[in-house]
Length: 417
Image 1 (cartoon, rainbow, N blue to C red):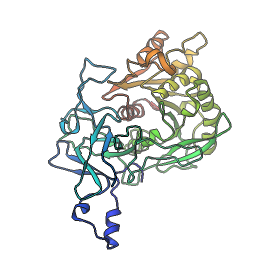
Image 2 (tube, rainbow, N blue to C red; image 1 turned 180 degrees about the vertical axis):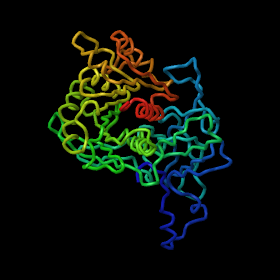
Image 3 (cartoon, rainbow, N blue to C red; image 1 turned 90 degrees about the vertical axis):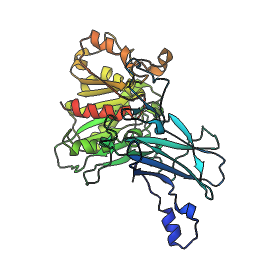
Image 4 (spheres, one colour; image 1 turned 90 degrees about the horizontal axis):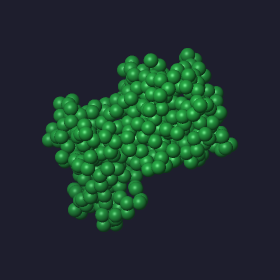
């Protein structure tokens, strides 16, 4: 089952087969195990075990760096961060691969081990062997999510979830909205192929809410884009988007919707092509194959980083096709012209958002590489044309700590409101 903590059954099967193992080997479970722990400052301890008989060095790299909110620092993370053992109530995680930790080889075994206290969150991690930083290895007990369709892709990290302790983490972010539901009120994610603007088989990720029915009133729909280097799996594997909407829907905080996630990396961030593909190929395929509305008032689009640049292009080129837009952690500030239909843009409900330590907030990339602008270069254009928008900042950086928080805000406070 995707994105849950995996407890390996290997040891049990070996013992059941009658094969002798040492007492030391019996005490380790390959993968990542999260346990409630009264001695932990967060209330939980995560233990990582990686099996490699031949390695001289195994390292764990992941989202294990923590920060305080320093009000005078915005757009880039402060130089000082804190490791898991230094975590204190009120800190927050930032950076998907922010910290590399040397693991210890357990004497008499082939297991490399490390443990750490972690607060609530959905974490990313990979293993590095013998100092090879270019080869990021998945946890074999917790594989990277893959779409498994023609021309499909996979996510680039293993992931897991840590629960919230309301007492020990009282001043930190509660990420319970990203937890998988255990009560049956869970939707489904599948990956499918459609024919894209180039005539090729191209992948989509599709979320259908719990209780989805072809006989119901047509569902509203969110089309969503990853960022640079990403693909159709990112929002589900990295952002737990399905779990987020499972929880929000079950709690009555938003209505059941369908979500369509694209792979826009395939078009080398040629935004005219991406937007044309969305309107001419993705939307017609989705409306033909799923019970979703064709009314623009029931359509939303969102994107992060280069997907935020994409979302800006959707807004400026096809605003009349969407009632709601989320532009997160990056934008396109080059689109202002006399041909833009600002009446259509003003009719769209818009959310801008970024992490407080996010270069997509104020920093940007040098010389606007690939058309990337920070949000603070888009807002003067919108202001000059009396375009209303909400601007949300959250404790995070340019990472999968920030974007789930922003999409939750978008769903609760903007969509269909």
